[in-house]
Amino acid sequence: MSQLYITLQAKGGVGKSYVSSILAQYFLHAGHPVRCIDTDTTNPTLLRYQPLRSEYLKLSEEHVVNPRAFDRLVETLAAADEATHFVVDVGSNGFQPFMAYAVENDLFAVLESLGVQVTINSVIAGGPDVAETLSSTKAVLEHTQAPTLIWLNAHLGALEYRHCPIAELHLFSPFEARIRGWVTLPRYPATTFGQDVEQMLRQRWTFDEAIDRLTLMPQRRLQRVKQDLWSQLERVRWT
Image 1 (cartoon, rainbow, N blue to C red):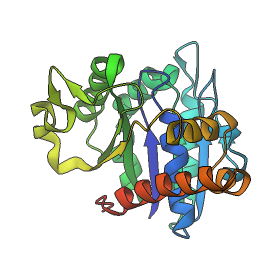
Image 2: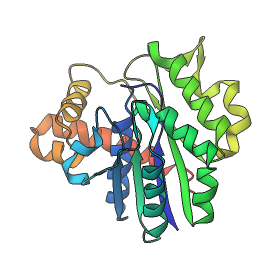
Image 3: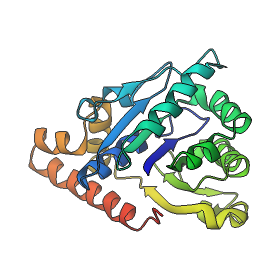
């Protein structure tokens, strides 16, 4: 059974491509065959991580869905070797078309029937974007039956909504059985860890590329960031 990990969030600039790249790197580190697909029509960031060798698939244009492109994606997933891990990054401008196609065609149930195990990645950002990103995650949980891995991005602010920690909000209670886990992207000190991560993201480097190219102390700090993320991912309920 091939695996599909698809990143969905309607809000742009909250770390979708970073999350997709982390997941691809984690699976490659674990020895799994990985295929990355970038569908962002305006800013295909995942495509720029050279070691990930991402493919590009244009699923929509001007918020209008291209059903044939979706059909090709389904055929690619269904025909793949059962060990393959697909990481698909859907841009914010593709969120509505993708959700419309998925609901209309019962996409995730079809994929499951074809032997494709689906996990949705949903990013919730702290600070000013919390309400909008929460709304998108809630829509994903309500309108699909797919298992979901929730990523909490603290880079933009506190991970709370109306003074309540995001992970403790009651809105997640009905979906607990489908939530595979929670992964936090911490807010690091700006002049050390934060600057190192920002440089890595700006250059579109993987962790291994950044660690190989930077000097001693940035290397050590990024190794700690990587180890923390890998440790969190090891606690995820993948099945």
